[in-house]
Amino acid sequence: MSTSSTAMSNNGEPLFEAFLNRHDEHAWEEVVRSIEPHIHEVDRSATRIWFYFFPLSVARALQQAEDPGQLARKLILKGRYLLKNQIDSSHQFLYGTRFWPEVKSAVAALAASTSAPASLDLAEQIRGVAGEVAGRIKTDESLLVGITAIAFMTLQQVGAAGFKASTAVGKKPASKTPEQILRDRARDDNQGLLGFLKPDKIFTITFDETDPDARFKLINTQHLTTAAAADKREYHSREPRCIVDEGPIPVECRSASCGTCWVGVLGGAEKLSEVRELEWRRIKEFGYIDTEDPKPLIRLACQAQAYGAVSIVIPPWNGVFGRFFRGYRSLLEEAEQPSGS
Ligand code: FES
Image (tube, rainbow, N blue to C red; front, side, top):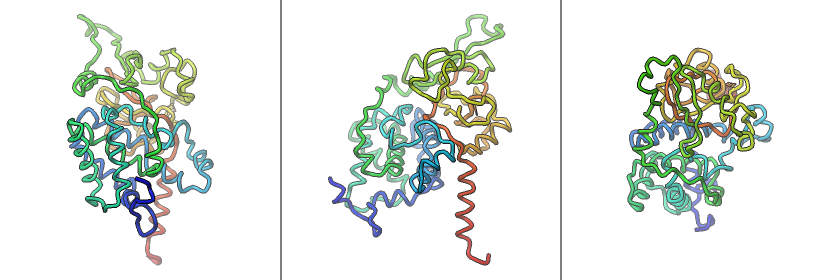
């Protein structure tokens, strides 16, 4: 269906996009929280990590900026921070990525529909699409809820035209079952018969579950970036933010000052050291996460020590935007105050 037959809102915005655009980052947080119990365990953390990796506030600020390049420099954005350039690949760390073609076409059809949305509850709509696609391809709905939420948010950030137009083919997902993936995440390295006597236990850190070679070894209690730096394979040509001979996790300062080394934790968050004051303060200033959780899903790899095998995912960009958006929000709140109050 052509966009010319798409139903329009009063201000000329396609109805479905107008509906999506009524949701800001805070509204989306509520949506993700409410659909979370319906997401299969294999993708529950991964879905939340994806939403941390692609914040709506950053995308909107860049879209609305007079000079997006200048704003990107101000927020020290480095790497691939625009979702429009990775529509079909940003979610490759989810199990549900294998259902992306079906989910994407269902969401694109919804965006092109001339009928009013079936529900004005976004969470309900996401579950409705996931259920409909699951029935059609005969798979468990819970495996589709996370990737469907991602499709809705992607459409909101990139617009229906860009969403439909992208045709990039993502990496082939691993052929493991969700249960195998969960078992792999829970497994720790076998230290041998007398392993408990070993002074230096060795653990495996996985940084891409779809690639059997994407692993490095870590000596018990090492920081993630220290262990990663011992991996001398070539990463710089694939990810220019990686320093030559410093491993697969991009780093700069190694002291919680730059924000380069943030990672998502897909499995084993409980086997990382608790967030200390410096990491807690800085990760919030960078804008990545604001939580009281002592073992959250987003960490600074130069501050997190591991005590076991952990599976992480490395975001394609980094920046420093927390302070900017806090200032931006208080300006908006000030503007909304009735005058004289
Ligand atoms: S390398 Fe700079 S914050 Fe970790």
